[in-house]
Image (cartoon, rainbow, N blue to C red; front, side):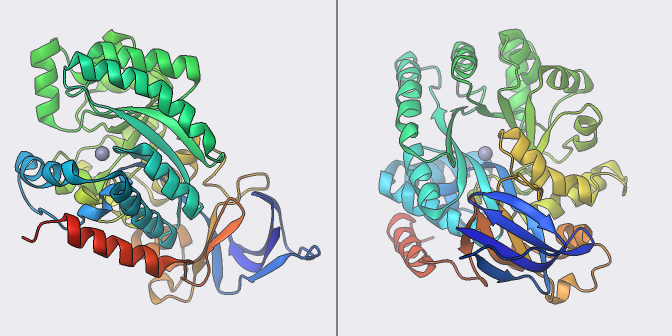
Length: 420
Ligand SMILES: [Zn+2]
């Protein structure tokens, strides 16, 4: 089935855009509709690439607003972990479905996830029509039995992911250097090389993590990974706030990618000085993530772009830092590059993952600069129609089956989350 978008705004021009199969086939001033083609009216709409959220924990949407404004360990030990211990596989699926719905509504086509029961998150993304790279989370806390089980399961899950479509990919997710041993990280490195999969790891998120790493291993986290011999282009490193210039050089030399999560870093008071410009200068790919809803409260990448840009200017006392077009690229095409997907760009031959933005919304008027409006003025609510893999997932703000997803998520929260 093909889709023709007529007379939409794209990069300063009014164009037609033709989608055939799951690809953008043609962009031109005027395209004649092929037979049987679905036509979408692009008047007063802009075509923009779909967002790529390169770090989240989708099912944690169910924790939104639960246990707020607490010290990290109180929040985890007294609120999150007791509830997680009660969660069934189906609960993870319901939480992930709610996340997928929110992503569709706010123009995100693709996410990189880390959570328990990865098959449930993958199933939710598959059914909802999204792309996802889903990690198997390794989390042994020094327990060799669990570590051995995690190694075995890494192979088993990789096999089980083969039943999904090409929109769903598998990767390894060693949780962090304080929950996974050095030997296990070396296993992940070998596994990633042998099977050509990514490794999704939280790193250098808090000062406490760095201090503990120095105490235990005599060196900072990036140097520790370097010494283990596991720095490589397979790595996708979330947070990456607390590091020095020499560590930035090590990351650049290794070809690893990093992901900025501004809302989570501010809300959990992990730190704020994410060295966006330092990475950019060295050619490191920097993606953007929301992190889970328990620490960022929504999955809206438009809001993440604004926070990243404002925060990056504020701590540097430099209003020219983290420019809107740079952070827009981080949220779209660079995210696609990090995951090895030709998404996040509006070009002939790219995957047909795109939003039609409603240009008649007051916060988008006037359109002196669309990119600036997208980053600084609006939110994901500006997405009118959303297409992923050549399929319309939302038209004029409505997603098929959304009422049931909302009802199920409400019922799950009612059952799972203790009343405060
Ligand atoms: Zn995270």
